[in-house]
Length: 268
Image 1 (tube, helix red, strand yellow):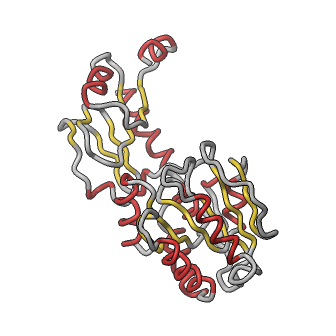
Image 2 (cartoon, rainbow, N blue to C red):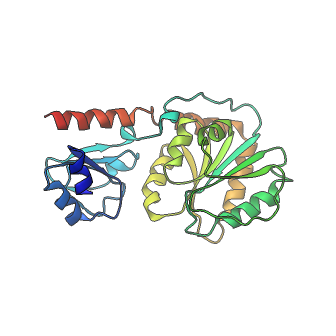
Image 3 (cartoon, one colour):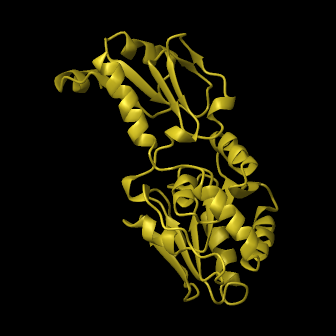
């Protein structure tokens, strides 16, 4: 990594990985590079120049940093892909006709198939008038059994935004997808698939942006999901409250703000 950075004359190195411990980060920082680190857990030493956590949970965490480390925390520094910088608020008064489902790039808890089975079961009853778009990430696999006609599996789709914008309701794990759904103002039922998602989910729930059903590893999580889904399908007012709170959460300018800070530090 150092060789690559030096070969192109880089002044800064941006790290978004849990694999770098304090010693490794300190080694990089001692090479004269400006080190910028994305960090959402605050469970390691961070001898770096800039720490970024765009989650609403960011300000509540305690970071092991030097006194001169710049902390870029909270939703003003949340990064979303360029296609999500602009959004069109949906109409919450219309019935739910499209459900977006995304549980992440991989399936560490083994919940893809059980969830698909439940959705398929209800596709001809509770969700009979709803198109269900289930996204499977790069490292996810699902059973290839026949499914209801209105349940569609998308393997790493190139245009996620179009699926999100069309959605009247969403089911999502607690990672970055939540912020993209927020930019689409899509009311979302969220679930936890990793410990690193807990602060994020708790903070978003506190701000009224999601309905958080907790860990997807608990025995009754599918029953909880069904109950919340059933409730939101018939309650446009609750969907509107969730969607509007989400759409007001971030403005899509986090990447620009971060870039301005990095540029200023390099120039100075």
